Image 1 (cartoon, rainbow, N blue to C red):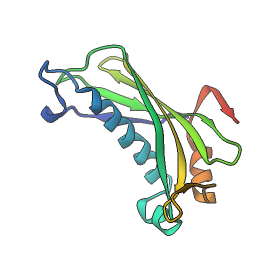
Image 2 (image 1 turned 135 degrees about the horizontal axis):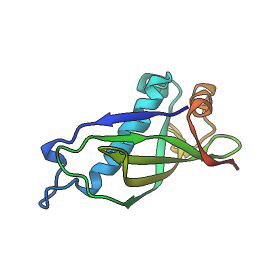
Image 3 (image 1 turned 60 degrees about the vertical axis):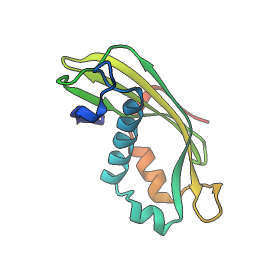
Image 4 (image 1 turned 180 degrees about the vertical axis):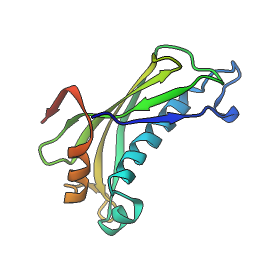
Amino acid sequence: MEYKKNLEIRWSDLDPNFHLRHSVYYDYGAYCRISFLYENGLTDAVMREHSIGPVLFREECFFKREIIIGDKISISLKLRSVSADFRKFTMFHEIYKNDGELAALLTIDGAWMNTQLRKIAVPPPIIIDSLNVMPKTDDFSMK
């Protein structure tokens, strides 16, 4: 299984060198992750109902190729690891341009936080179900 989103570059996504601003890569990753969760039943209403939401500890991007306006880009999402209780996770994105040229690799480490207690928490079954159906990296691990 594969999960990908196609994206369009907006003028406001560019920096003074006329290529994609570094922070936009992170925005695209967040868009892809939230799109996947929504498409798998994990909406903001569900998260509010369960008083839970995602929190990030680390975002890291390796920039491989410049992206400029007019490039056709896509971003993939895979789960790299999850803790045995599903509280913590690592997700991985590949950003491609035009004819499949790898432009960037994005990795995030995060967890599920109880929004009332403001503490990391074991997520409810709907979140576990969403993570279980997320595509996995070849080196996926449950810790």
